[in-house]
Image 1 (cartoon, rainbow, N blue to C red):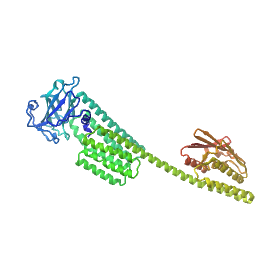
Image 2: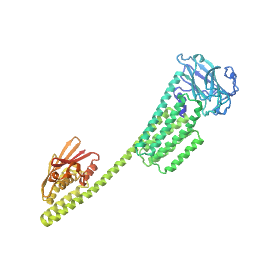
Image 3: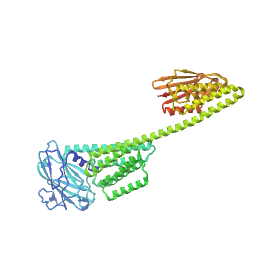
Image 4: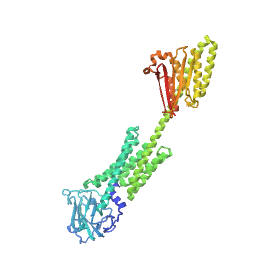
Length: 571
């Protein structure tokens, strides 16, 4: 329980010497602190009970089951202290008193040295003191030898006190050092869970509103406010009357935090039968709240371990790292509650949050990969569709030309049919490939210009500059650009010229295809602001994306009297 942070911190830094009898011994030569749990107590009120020579042999010894809320009147504690050695003349001995009742008076060797609230026989007159108090003892009081601590107490406001009352002895400087370390640990805990909550909430709001991210943000906020409340109890002067709020908060927040942790694992790994698992966890949480101490809620994350193990079986992304994180966290959470291990638990919390963030990042990466794959599949389907559309379009125009030439010049029609067969033979050979050598693409283009020359009763030629035969390109991209140029730039019987240029710039290859034609000068449809992106350009883009996803650029437009298309590919 984090509310015992200071006591647990002392356990690891100062090595407590707990008193299991009626006397506690403090060594002034040692920097170690000592804590006393067992005190003698007597119900009633007598000023003689503060005296050192009073015989308290008939008094009972306070045990773990003693609870001041059962007392309706004033009562007293007495504790014998032996001080040995020589006191550090530059420091003071101090007492840290942990919530014995609503109000109390503290006596040292028969003298009243401190009042916490106002002790009274009725609720009207009683004034509540602070939850915890640090009392500095004067050097004259802490001489070597036997001393007596006596406390006069009342609890008319019935403040609950389910934890053992204790008094802690320590040098003031050492206590302050330990208190500062505890403060730093609390702040680390608060900051760590605040950042985890903030990050999870950002993922929820900006990442598709995944419920698991919101649930983990709630889990982190539970832990953050747990540390804030615990920090406030120890480091601010809070009235004992509010301690019931702290206890109720602890009793509820821990089981609810563990519930949200289990829900996070259920939703994060998309566990089947969610309603069943949620119902089981809600039922378990209610059982722990109403029938067990809140410390037993440290067993609830075992359910998350099972969920993570099942996620590994289903090969869910991030499940292995999440299992390691929740396992370590659950082990040290239990050790924290049952074995008072505090420092290791802080490290386990840091490790747990780190593993969960890694698990979430791997899930996001897996989702992005699935999305990219679906986009690639979509692009491929679109490419295949364009392939099927390009070829019938070209075939239809060519067959219409053959029909007209059969009547006018049968011999020319035969040559046209032969060229068409040669072109289709080449297209069928390369169209299914992702890339082909550029010389095959050029050969296809030259054959197409020859075929179209027969169709259009004209002569077309392709000029090649700086072409390297070992370059690879997607099939039919230049073929498609030439077909577009023939369709939109030349009149029937008009001769034409195409120019293909290649330039290398680092890891980029730049291709430039340009053509002339009288229609470019006369048609307003070729002005830059009225260009219509037809099937041919869509086909070229689809082919480029299929081969070089995200690594290409295409631009086109008029350059003087020529139509120019520029393709940049990052190899």
